[in-house]
Image 1 (tube, helix red, strand yellow):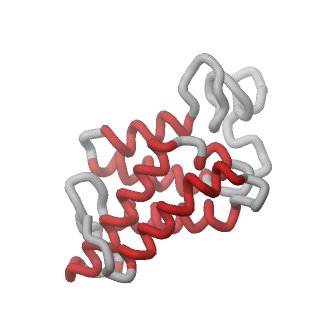
Image 2: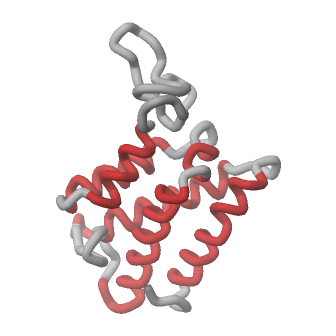
Length: 155
């Protein structure tokens, strides 16, 4: 995750702010915001799945802060992960065993939910003790997903 993740047509790294940035500010939405929007609102389940998968692929120590500072992105990850665990606990299956793409809710498939769960774990490992606000944003989601995994919460 240390290499530039996007390459500008003129050779500039996509990192930082402005158009094409992973999680920066600037005058346009970042890639993380675009992916969050697709995961939340696209009518096509495959697009939503691919958006969650791409978010998972972008999650690392370098991007964890940008993830944690986006409540909508965290909500997508939490909703998908909790739906995955709730479907599993309610007899919905493993969601991905043998390549099965089973819906867990009207929004996310089990594959997306599993990736969302794994992405939250990447964030948990990547957010350091000096990232107090980021920790406060992510910790309740991790607790909620853990409760869903244990069958203690239903969405």
